[in-house]
Length: 238
Image 1 (cartoon, helix red, strand yellow):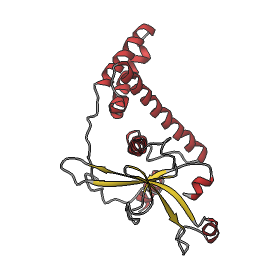
Image 2: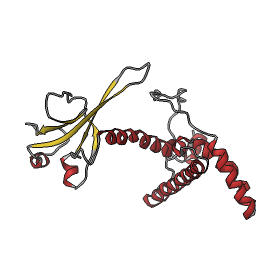
Image 3: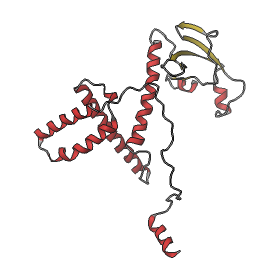
Image 4: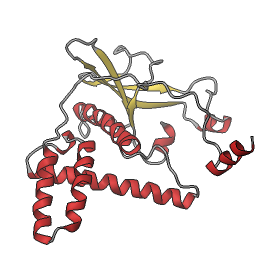
């Protein structure tokens, strides 16, 4: 955290589970909101060099905000947030809770880029081509998000509730027609595309969690570590 503040930046993150939460220490500045002092450990922790450890201050004041997640049918969870923004009048408690809640949307968007669009496996070989490949994926992602935004704002639907995968499928189906249509018909097709995208609304499912497992076991074959023509040659000479 000290390295972040040294760069002139502020941070909001979840408190590590090894630190206990208590209201008996610190200065209370509001409901579920207090200022606490973190002291420098006596020993250099792992992951820091001795020079970095010596450069740390003896203590640092942070702001701790905690709240409860109550979902019917699930165990109540307590979440503690730590931030370097200490002014409560400028940054309210609810704003931090909403800001941290958007972190889940960031994780979903990264998953969409890697999984939905298929950027988890890059096929180029050189660094320059890999950069171009990543840029193409980002352009495609921005195109889909712009369509979702246009569809949501046109038909009064929250754009974040629309399905990115559904938008991708509809766009792929409309591309051949859009390429061959004249200007006036292309406008009508575009409006029809926006209207169809709006019908793919993702329902709100609070508390939903899915295991990170594969549906089927992979085949017991070795990895393809050589070009196919070399492997074919080995089969023919074996």
